[in-house]
Image 1 (cartoon, rainbow, N blue to C red):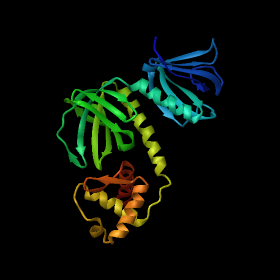
Image 2: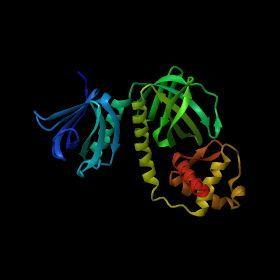
Image 3: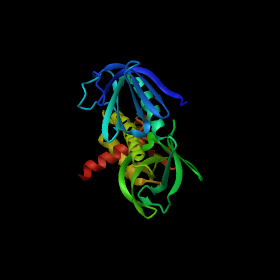
Image 4: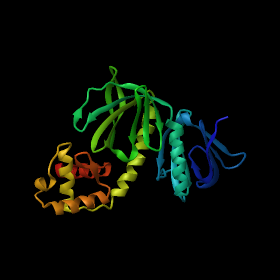
Length: 290
């Protein structure tokens, strides 16, 4: 019998059922299905293999707003598409979302190319097979050569693209993440496009949390200039005071401020950008070049 991964009570709304929006329900999740039980006689079972999307924080327009943090599960009901919303307290919703994504994605066969790029330099690496899993450290790809982990707090960009994989054009997920100041690009493809879409949604959900933490960030002109200079220097050993035209004590104060905000960290040759710092620079450069 599949083990129970989640068991709690929440408010639900289901597109395919004649239930009132916001009806109280027991929510059960195991390794193969999501069960919503309003009563002994009113139960909906959603096979996880039919789920194609999970969205946190929003409720589809077909439903009335629900109290609490909503988690929308989109699935196929026969040949039709349907949606179910589970709303509960924020902490419970967060735990439920985490185990739901793991149940949907863990053990998925993938082919990855890593690193496909280091900074702006394309690396001649081949695709290799692996198994996908979500861990506390991030998105893990277990390969014969060893594990490859994309840390969630290191992701600075991701995109769905079409690329040639083993001589065939396939949908891929392109993820850029920061490792010790270097921007690494990993390309992943799954046999199931549904699983690839769910992985993209998972990364987007985590990425939005990082973006929200930067929403109220305000930087001075000197701080922005320092970040972009560190970005431009890359792995070159440069003197920041000389490049910035400022005295060492002023530069030191600016670096301390950026470090305290989690935008830079110490590297082998000096300060390097964190993932948050890389995102800030990316957005700044997009505004300048627009």
